[in-house]
Image (cartoon, rainbow, N blue to C red; front, top):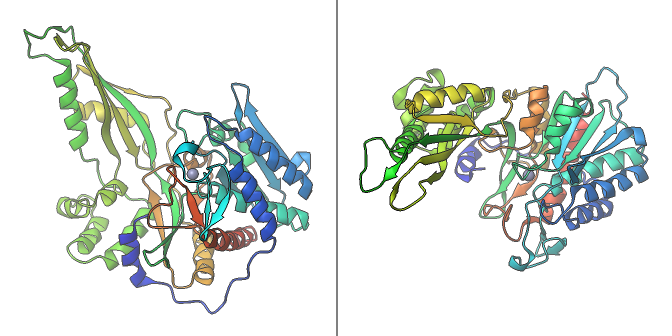
Length: 467
Ligand SMILES: [Zn+2]
């Protein structure tokens, strides 16, 4: 999330609400659940998501969920990468289910590099410290805690609320539980919409909430190999044909190619808001680009900001190079990994054809690298979902503006949207300007952020579950 944009958006801040939120009950039980989540190592290298799913299943059963409402799953090749799906059945047969999505796995943490034990929940100076305290065990704990409370109190909602806590989100080549569910058990997660990570909020430098974000749609990652081969020979006798030259020219062509400007409903709304608050020449250029995506001069000005540039289009960039085999030999092989971030709706095969055309050298082959991602459908700006998010934000975080954003990164939403479930990254959990050590050292989140996030997210789910 970008604080410069949020600071600008503050000019359009929502008015303060008179109504003040009521804290959710059961804080002690929530803290115990969160502690168990954080203190169970679920990293790919030293941990087990299955072990955490087992512990959660015990809690769900104790709350009254029956075997028909709890599904634990894993595959024999990856016994430690299991997940869990729980259904709180609804009362209104006409109301479609909703899905709460979260990931159990965390990025590995090396205890010797951390100030505190990463797999112990430590509360200090107003922060919770520990791997996963933010990504994604805070929100995942809120989801699990709410379902447990509703079941224990025998309070079903109109919609069936489905909860899926899965493994493998943090590692591209790991077994991915969300992908597995979408392909093998879509019935378990089919829903009118899903709430996921990817949204949130940001504190300003003064420690006050600066802005909230709801993530509506995201780009999809696709990697390609571009490769040139050559008979090679002695380097004392160079020839015009050369594998390294071929791949170098191809990289320049790819890295300097500009894909066309595109908009989704989300990015259109986002840029429309931005145009209102950014000064000339950027603001007026955004307005021109919105009415004519082919306006080259407007595109040039708006795209000078690298984030805007990426939000406006598919991007591809070379990220790895391997070439040659000896100091005194002409290279027989040169290749580069090209990392593309596909705009929603882009077909990876069509993008391969684009790269062939951009490189325009029959000696350079382009091939898709596994995993080949499904075509991401743009997520709609559904007012039935965004509306309550904004209304409750005005109550819980008065005066804090909320922006809808398309992410240039990727979450498990890329596996869920292809089965027809639009995914929204929920606002509510605030992070600091320094990024809170997510994926890095000494991951942390303010206690206040978790508790107020819990109040907001719980009320949001209860509101959306009763259309
Ligand atoms: Zn995450």
